[in-house]
Length: 183
Image: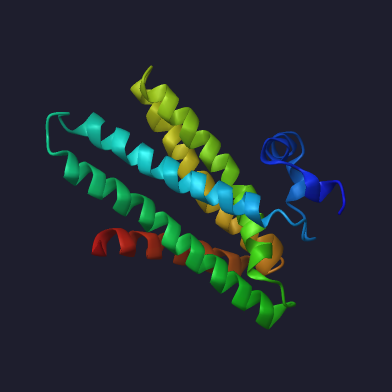
């Protein structure tokens, strides 16, 4: 095994913070587990963000079940489209470029979703200090989710086909809103 594949998660995060271009490259690095961990962390942070936002909008004495259900729906409405887009990216890349495994796209999307997760965790921390910074950081985090979908599709799946990458982002957006409204 090479030294790159023997990184633990903390080393992986430090490398992602210091040199993201080393991990987000065309070659498969074997970090699919870390990518999956990043996606799961993002789902948990989306859930926590939604709970905090629900409690800031509504009175804390209201029914908790409704808040929990809405928070779960919110997290699911981002994760299911993200997984679907990853599968669709794999299919498009197989038809257009070459055959890569789904682990390749999980690794790349997981590396890219680290940054929205970081912004979501910062926004959750700032909720307790200042509500305006919470809103600003949350908006930035959600924008980075869409940018991440575009970057992974543009660099790895559609390989420099702008229209196809934009279609991925639009499908991700529409599918996430559709799932949120049907649940």
